[in-house]
Image 1 (cartoon, rainbow, N blue to C red):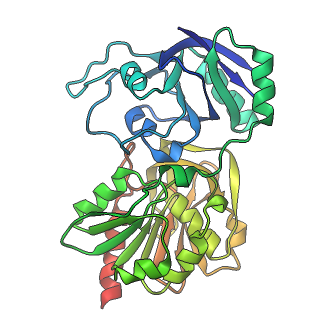
Image 2 (cartoon, one colour):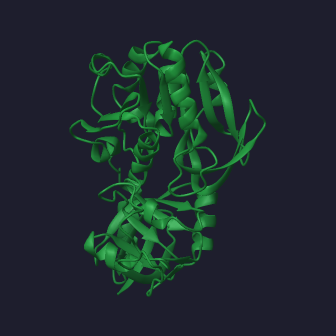
Amino acid sequence: MKKKLILESGEVFHGQGFGANTDTEGEVVFNTGMTGYQELISDPSYCGQIVTMTYPLIGNYGINRDDFESIEPAIKGLIVRELSDFPSNFRSQLSLDEFFAKKKLSGISGIDTRKLTRIIRNHGVLKGKIVDENADETAVIAELKTKNFPTNQVEQVSTKTPYASPGRGFKVVLVDFGSKLGIIRELSQRDCDIVVSQDTTADEILLMNPDGVMLSNGPGDPQDVKGASELINGLLGKVPIFGICLGHQLIGLACGAKTYKLKFGHRGGNHPVLDLKTGKVAITSQNHGYAIDEESLKNTDLEVTHIALNDKTNEGVRHKKYPCFSVQYHPEASPGPEDANYLFDEFVEMMEEFKK
């Protein structure tokens, strides 16, 4: 089936559709990872987005039962240069095309993803729509220019009711803003007794008497997450806190810093980050379109711990008074390198120290 991708800026790309034969629209972004497409399409942080893969061949190892980061994908669509029709891997159960069809997701292949990536880098992220080859381009462009996409992504992807992932170690409340399963996996490997919750208050969390609180990744603008600052300020100093990605941005906002939208974001498994304390560089997995304004940290109780080497944006903070730290990147990886998963060990050590 012939499809085309139309951008609000007027560019039109013609290609071949895969998955479900339906139109789809969203914010068009790009990811520089060479592998990890299964984790990517199931990462709740991509809610509302159509993702362009810069690596030219996607789908060559199929879809398996193990590498999902959520049960239901929240991604809006996928754009690839070439789609592998015949995956070859001993774990493969479905092709990417078959998976997208079963999940009623729409994708497009055969597009010049290098040109598209350059457009996004120059313009910033753009609204786009994957439509049938015969769709009226002028009408779609006009529609996209006036379209306002939903801003309640966290509400869409977070858990509706609290649940437990039992362990025998420290009790950790994971505040789910769209958490990847990789975070639960890393905590479980450290024998943590996990309770996952979302629309909750500091009092309700403290009633559970946790040893620590994790603030998860998630989609969208941190300023759209209602009640997060009150929640965090109600926990600071009372229990150790570790934030990842959106959780990191929310800690910044709660402590008086500001956030801003990046031109085209950081998405991929190959982003170098400098640890200012050790001087070591970690190659990290990243997926974010917003960042903490480093200038705005100067009058807060937060100190900078990590910076991105590609563009010098903020990648980590630590509270000067209370046991609380956070990073913008993904130490749980999935996909990407696991250079930074030692941060989960630091969180465990922080909980041990706090109990003394």
